[in-house]
Image (cartoon, rainbow, N blue to C red):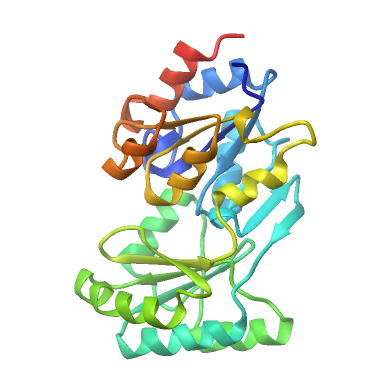
Length: 267
């Protein structure tokens, strides 16, 4: 089957390092990009994806950021779903109780209180820089501007993350997706959106999810892979992701997405 849209997760999937794509990947995307649309799909903010679009030569394509909470096409917002200020304040209160740091994201805005090692890693990996200020100041500013969050990042030790996760689920799971991206990080996003819902917004009238080939590695990619015409897991993907994938390619560090494209997408 000739697919019309290729959607790929970034971290742990398309990226062969923590922050960049390989020359092999660039070459393969350049080979196919005139034959199908290539859409980057990530939990990152747009600014952390734009440089990769430039590297791949697909700046003219839309991108799906914040796991689907913000969909942008050439700086035009296609869809935006935010966490409102009241929920933000409640989450902040709970984070304070557990002494867990908060990162607030909206569009290309990113606010944190302290320059921790986790924040420095995020800066290196995504080539973005936050504004350092108190969470209270950020929330007051957003309330005045009527701005909500596309994503909240909770950053603490593994023990603190373990302690707060059940409380987050108990109080907020009806309204929010609470996603443990690793032992020390918890990502929170609006419940009504996902990578899948965002991809559907970008399909042409005559297209369905059967026209999509997608690549991923983590829990937040499962729905996208399951509903694509072909869902491909990279070799380093979580076992639960591999179990639902139609195919498995090499790990991201071995350029798994590019390898699969080279071997299977022939035009």
